[in-house]
Amino acid sequence: MVSPDNPYGSWLVELAKAAAAVANYCDHVEHNEPAERSWVLASASSLRRLAAEIAAGEGRSLRDLYAARLRQVEQRNPAWTGEFDGGVLAEEASTLRELQLAQLAHDRHYHPDIVGLSKADQLRHCALHVAKLTGALAEFLCEELDREDFLTRRVPDMLLFGLKLATLCGEPLAEEPLAASPSFELLSS
Image (cartoon, rainbow, N blue to C red; front, side, top):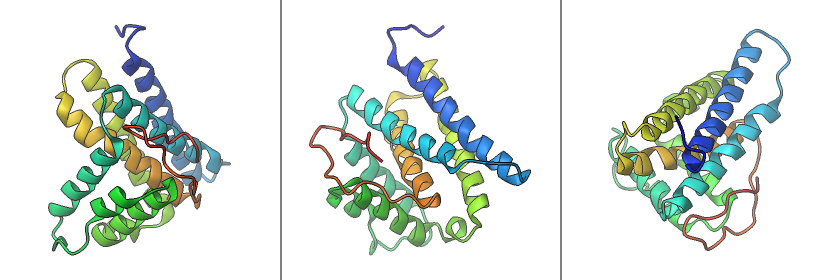
């Protein structure tokens, strides 16, 4: 049972709702039923905010976690030569929009297999990742997942998919400067 004093419990519930909303959108589109883009955009906003809140709660810099995660993904990719470093773009970003563009550049360079999919297939791919993040948060909450692994892989992935889902829905993010807090405030979209 999750303690009401543990913020991870409420974060898990919110992440589960975000994952369900993206999956629900994908399911409705596949069945040619009415679907609202706002379902995905709200989930994207939740993912960005959750990443910021968890990083801040752990006393970690979300920007540093995100930049390191991009580098980790890039360096294990067969296209990696060291010439393109998405981590540098993330470190130099001064607005949420610049982070969104850094993620887009990273995806174009290192994930042409995903970028080349239809929007529906890209959204379904993201829904799978957000579901995996939900499971990872549940495992972490049950103390079955290493804290450092969760913080260095899963938290930045929440930001990553919060940026990616907004991009897939054609939503340019805010040009406002990122706050100078240890994580940074991502509440605006």
